[in-house]
Length: 378
Image 1 (cartoon, rainbow, N blue to C red):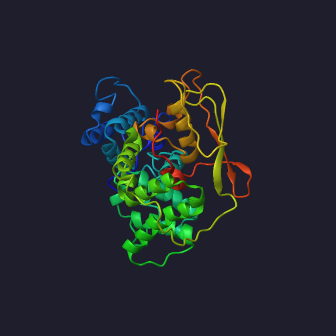
Image 2 (image 1 turned 90 degrees about the horizontal axis):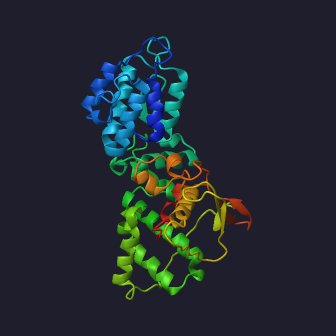
Image 3 (image 1 turned 60 degrees about the vertical axis):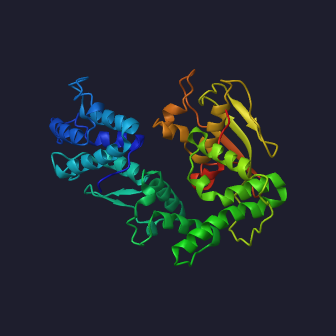
């Protein structure tokens, strides 16, 4: 593979693979690293090549280069990860009886990091995409999320042994989870079914609780679904787009439309509504704060610096397991959520009421909750 995924975890893991501090010497050498760093034009991030630290070790050197790539040239960083892995493999770094063997723990850590992004690392250092047909539902969702997080993944075919590309694999999985199975062989039909079933499921369930204004908004979003779905939350782009659509079409849209018949599998643990969010040592919150959600709508307002953004990002983290703003700025989540005053970080605790009317802790489910976020107004 010419490119491999790159994130903070993979950066650390593959840096440890070149660690030779406990042995006299082990290839790849610094000269080998020079070659692939220069070939990938990442020398601006290399403390050795820019003269910042000519005695820097291999671990810190590779990690510095990859951190620079995460910030300034992510795509080239992905190429560098693939080149580095090929270099290690070429020096027999994955063969246990080789003097250049990188070690079992380093291989385990790298394998785990790549698996989270949908890549399998074999014992001989070869990499292949995960075969989706062999995964459980949860593993399937994690693998698909890993693929879709990668830049350009929407146009990349998956070597799954099923002839399905990424988009079809995602759509088929959605339909299977909703209907139990899918039989469409025609992909446009399958895609159309997914786009219509998902919003219909929500609207059919909550139509009796929605006002005419809310139904109008739903219709506007459905009529312009492609534009809304492909827009980003970063910088308020999605919110601005929806606002412009409401301004343009709000008075002319008929909120009365057929919802059709939908079938779905409802589990006892399905969350019907959110009930409480607890934050402490998270972004702008040093002390513990408990937010109760007792009404259909919750408005959070206050002066600058009062914690509105921190509240929204705590909710986002609890539902998705990530924060879009941190991803956009290439900042690791541990660093991003740390409270500036205490220097500590704690994960927010979100609770909700399930189908049995019991209050339970809500766990991150990005594949379910991603589209819940339009824009936080701060």
